[in-house]
Length: 53
Image (cartoon, rainbow, N blue to C red; front, side, top):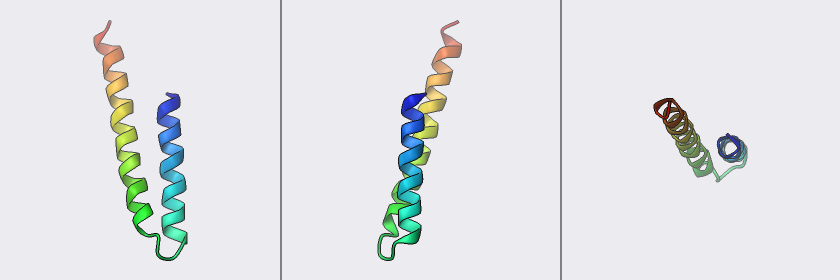
C-alpha cells in the first residue's frame, strides 16, 4: 500500500508541474502513465490476496 501511495504522490507532483510550468507539458503525460501503473499494481496486489484464501 505504501508503494501505491508513493506512486500516487509522484503522479500528482508530475501532473501539477506539467500543467503549471510552461514547456513541461510532457510531465503531465508521464504523471498520467504513473497513475495508471499505480492502479494496476494495486489491483494485482489485491487480487493476490483474494486468491490466496
